[in-house]
Amino acid sequence: MKLKIRTGFGYDVHQLQEGLDFWLGGIKIPYTHGALGHSDADVLIHVICDALLGAANMRDIGYHFSDKDPKYKGIDSKILLKEVMHLLSREGYEVGNIDSTICLQEPKVNPHIPAMKTCLAEVMGIPEEDISIKATTTEHLGFVGKKEGVAAFATVLIVKE
Ligand SMILES: [Zn+2]
Image (tube, rainbow, N blue to C red; front, side, top):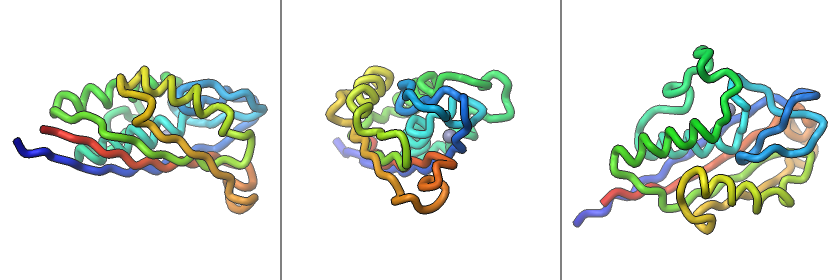
C-alpha cells in the first residue's frame, strides 16, 4: 500500500461594504459591514476550497463555480465546499488537516472560531480537531487594516491510499 500525501494552499480577498451580511467560516458575523462577492463572499470557505482543489491539482474555485454564472449568485459557500469535498472524494482523497488564518481588523474573529469549526466540520464531514482557524489584524496597515477588506489563507493536507 502506497500512501499519497499532497498539500494545497489558498488565498482570497473580498471587499467590505456597509449593510451586507457578513458570512465567515459558514456563519453570520454581527457587524455593520459584510463581504462583497458574487456568492455569499465567505472568504474562509473560499480559501479552504482553493487549498483542497489545489492539493488535488483540480484548478480553483472560479474554474468550477464561475462568478459569471447566475446559478451561483448569492450562493451559500457551504454548498460549494460540499461540492469540492465530493470532487476530492471521487478521486479517492481524504482530508488530513486544514490550517487557516483570517486577516481582519474588525470585528474580533476569535469569539466566533468555535462556531466556525463546528459548522465547517459538519459541512466537510471531518472532525473539528482537523480544522484550525486563526485570526490576525494587520496592525491598521493596508486594506485589511483600513477595514476596506477581509483576506484569508489556508493550507490543507490530503491523503489517498
Ligand atoms: Zn472569494
